[in-house]
Amino acid sequence: MVKRKIHITERDATRLREWLHWGGRRLKLDREYVEVLQRELERACLIQPEEIPPDVVTMRSQVRLVDVNTEQEMLCTLVFPEDALATDGSISVLAPVGAAILGCSVGDVVRFQTPRAVRTLRIVEVLYQPEAAGHYFL
Image 1 (cartoon, rainbow, N blue to C red):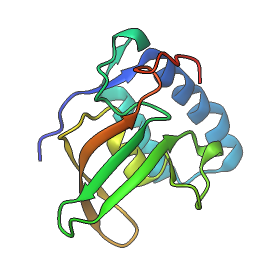
Image 2: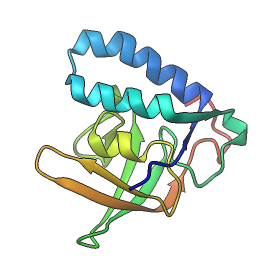
Image 3: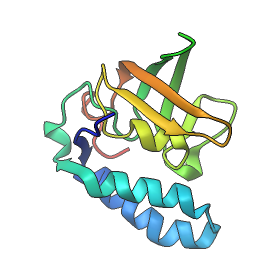
């Protein structure tokens, strides 16, 4: 599977880098997950929030995903690690699925390793994207 360029707002990239620098040290996070997110940030094309296409998954976007193998649907909201709760459908950007979908667009297929298996998901729909709604400072 070829890795395409992903798009991230400059504001999200800055906040994620700061979080990785300060929060990552404080919480002693799993180094593997931190490195995956760092690699995603390195390959990203940075865009002003006002210019990001509405079908791109940004921080705090709510998205519909489908497992390519099982056709199981999943709704999630991509959040910063401190905002992730297991019960409300939020997914931390540090989780394997979170890092995989960040900056991707509707129609993209992402593949990532979980502790149990390799998963392949298709991004079906961005139900809410802060930038598309004019919410630039969430």
